Image (cartoon, rainbow, N blue to C red; front, side):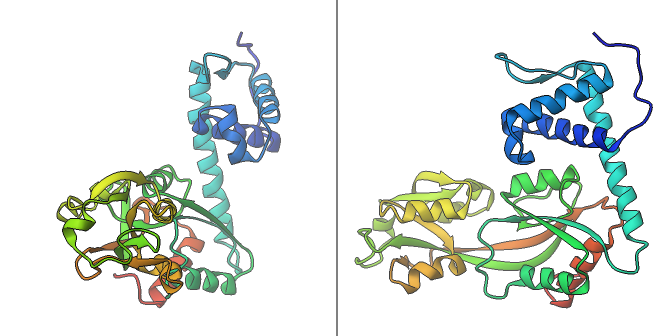
Length: 305
């Protein structure tokens, strides 16, 4: 039952409880929020109960029927998001007044880019660190869909990923391109046989789950696709079972090629190029740390104006 008392001021404790509540809602359960918060389920339950007591209302239903928000809980969740956003804006405006650059950079990166030889992202992050030791870098490794959503919801400041299709609300800055080729392992029947397109098409292949959005129907339709993966490491795992062939970025596959554990199949024909972008929100608020990071990429002459 909702009581009549009001929350007269927001304390640091309230902010902590509200952040916990937001994480639970976004994860869809107490269990799902454990890894996000690095807290046990029992601790999360105590925090939510404390918040309900502080507010004098029931925020969510939990039990065998699953997790769901009450009407009041939905309103508190929306208000909490606005409060956190306002808090972030305040913090950024304060940080922008310092002579020394301070603040956070929340960046989302698609998996397995660290093996790219030119190390564009690493170099830009290094420059950011050299400019100021008062900057906190938070990196989230994820897939393009999750990075896009996190950018739109304000959880990330910038993302590095391939552009699969235009997304309203996001601004794309061209970064670089990578080439992917079709590989088999050294224990696969194709490894020691002459390359033949018809024979290659008879063997099981694995594709990334976003391959159908990459506008490569003539290439992919020639393969016998029997498996998918949401990232490139999953493709590599299946190739190394010696049962599948699959596309990997050339820079990522080099470690196995040089050891003789993989080889490319018809590399002049069975390959494709992926364009990568630095992605930000179109309505990005003023944030000096992000501006400095983007300028570091420009200094490397990798972002087109």
